[in-house]
Image (cartoon, rainbow over the protein chains, first blue to last red):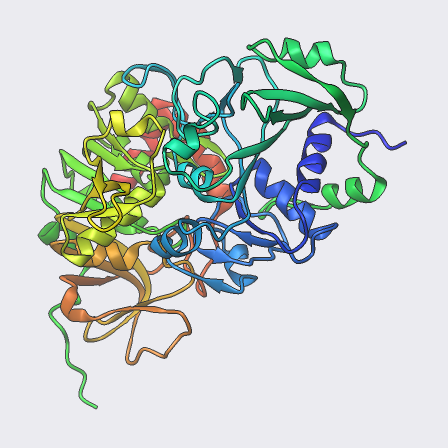
Length: 252
Length: 271
């Protein structure tokens, strides 16, 4: 079997989450890499939408930023930023929001704003961007991020983008129409919210990853599904396609 | 046809001197594309102070203005070096007040875009489905809620943005000062129409604007000044003219990270 890195397993597992024909609002970084991989594999008709207003874009190389020229050249259409948020995202037309974050908690709330106190943070992060409304309005949300103890916290320092709030019913009470996070894909496994408690539960581990390692990298007492599964290892084709992805401006 | 020299078209230095004053609220827009770097650098050269800088994605351009000491406040929704990392001058100003303390007013992209829409529409606020359940409203006075008079639904409300001056970069203008831009057009139209004064820098001034599909056209009579600034968006890009200089974005990380290296960069810019 071909050797692969845990990051590659994460990206492949995230790509498999996307189904052909879906409309996907893509965050930059890990989500963008996974979404572009899915389009080259099992989902050639995946509609990629970036917050810069590029709709149904098919970039030959991965963009470095969400507004790179490669996204424009291959887009079906380019709309303004108010339009992408108001007409396309807000009414619930988008199937999947694909996001990442610096911190994630047991209810899948995402922090990309500050580590520590807002007024005097330990680390100032970039902030919201499009994520709060992507998390609110897409039919469902898939989160991709590396599984580290400092990132998988009991309670996020700042709720930038709402997951399931403080538990079941929070999203509905706030009038949010989208289902919120349905899966969290990490470099160790897959977490899904428990249907009753909305708390993230480990439902799958990637090949060779012990459950104890996942629990050790999670700050809350991570529950493990009774029917815990194992992710299929990346196929040769998946790895080959992933490794052929280039970011604009990178060497071969 | 007789060519009429419009009073709208002027040199960049003259336009900045006339339109941008100390203490102004200034929005330099351009979503990754068409970022008005040349105009911002002119603001640095002219030593403007105490500006409230408004921009969805502060990017390198505001990192430079903040590091140069031009700003006292920042209104924004995503403050990073896209695909690279942090804005270190912005972080240094926030954490250490270097070279000057910086207040922030923070939104989401949807919130900022709608604030410009309200400003351009002559409305005091905009309504959106946004911010629900997030921590931003507790820290940002320009986010509130409003109850729909027809359905009773509670929705987010954001205060209109009406900058003293908006600065954008475009591909071209004609000699009357009508401006045309295309590709990713971001919030430029809204930011210009929301502003009290508007300055547009362009790659070139041409005799006639050839129609381009999907282009935004800004008529000369809604603009205060138009200045020719070839490569005025570099290291961002101008669709159809030049590509984004991704290497420069990556290199900025090391320059912005270090006060001494940044100061050297600043001295070279001012020379």
